[in-house]
Amino acid sequence: MGAFEYRQAEEVRAAFEAHGVRYLFIGKSGAILLGFPDTTQEADLFVQNSAENGQALVRALRDLGFDLVAEQQNEILRRKVFIQFRNGPFDLDLAFAPDGIEGFEDAWQRRVTVSGFPVCHPDDIIARKKAADRVKDRESLPRLEAVRCRPFVTLPQFR
Image 1 (cartoon, rainbow, N blue to C red):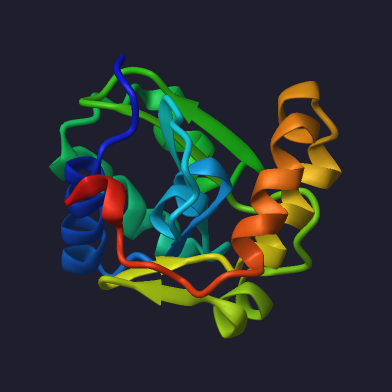
Image 2: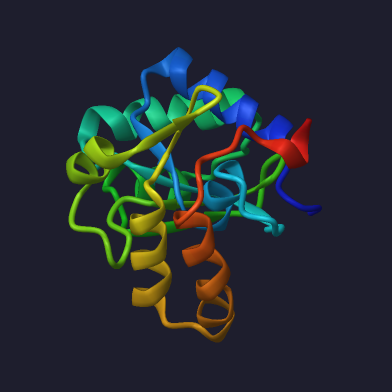
């Protein structure tokens, strides 16, 4: 798969809104929507952990063109903590309970809306990267922290 693109974010937003899915862009895809000058291979989403949201999520993913096998659908419906999808129109990582963030409702209250996209606050994205403690996350932390200190921009790399 290629790099995460603005078009994919728009497709996610449209399908998730149509089905009433509560979600936030998180991880590097969220940071990119906030103006972080980098790339990522997948869309990272933090989804509300509820049965209703899980059912809506299954419908939305199918509308987006994801070929959900029974095991993936079951993982969503039982709200597995982290699920990766590599069988759709783009790569997607879903987190029902991402490391470093207390809960969806708290993150929702802190969210930043950028051009209609609900995005985790930079502090939450940074907390998740710190909790993951992977080399690639540690390397990007200084740049992410710099994004946190400047005003939010409206997607200059996609326009």
